[in-house]
Image (cartoon, rainbow, N blue to C red; front, side):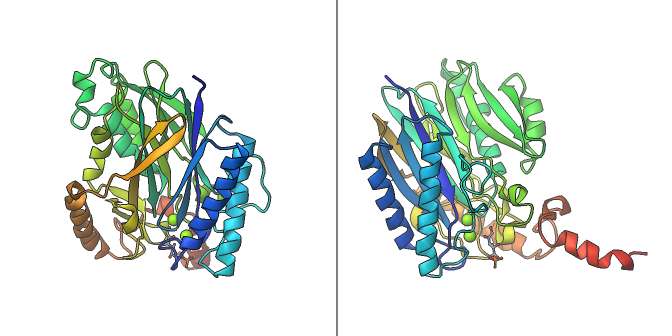
Length: 362
Ligand code: F6R
Ligand code: MG
Ligand code: MG
């Protein structure tokens, strides 16, 4: 069977209200455009959703990764949806379209993108995660737990097909270099890097036969723009079952509302709250940061689904804990560790404040 490519391409092209959520007209417009593209044959199938103010396009096709045609189609869609956002005067219309002209690939231009190509298995369960009010490093901890931690993924111990472990591709976002590290052999080195989740970001995970298992979007919008334009609100895609982690093992790390960077003005630590799509609208202090998980069965590239995986009472405790943590850490106001450390404030007002005060430092 021919290989298929799944692309998740996302952008914040305007919020409703403020940066909290998405206007339904944007979703409708995006669906119309993708439906046309499906009829024209460019796409096998698509699904449109949002997490907070981010528009998420899930596409299946035969064009391969980094396809100019697919990326241009997504870019043009974001431009068209920005027009809808402008008509409604939605907030921050066109926020992520950092360049005026399309340059062949959405990567490095503002939108986020995660893609994988594989031969569809006899049954192909996949989960698409999308986040709002946080950065791509948010996937480091769950990916480690899913693919390297037997206390999360018992399959690493008792499924012979997983017993050899996995290979992690880690991106140094400042140097733009990738290192491959193996689990279990290199886990201490791996943790040494990915524990600094604002610097080293897991880009993809493969099994030891070289089969793709997970990918993330690794853009850093603030590094691209050179000034603060928002956190990246990343996406992640994970294949599940039959020698890969089970659906439940893939979801398990989110039972802990671990701390991620983002929240208000992209400048705070906050608990990552797993929510259903209907609750994916960060409000309190523009947060707390949210994550949704949509499960699909692929059938010849068609998305059967979604199942809204966090619309489940077994995540109630995580949500309650997230609210407790949010309450506690919020009381620190502008002080660390609620506020991010100085190194992560470089793209905010910090340089201006330092410049203004330079003669007053004696
Ligand atoms: C964080 C985010 C919001 C905004 C905040 C200020 O990623 O999107 O918290 O940073 O609402 O927004 P502006 O500067 O547009 O008024
Ligand atoms: Mg926004
Ligand atoms: Mg957002």
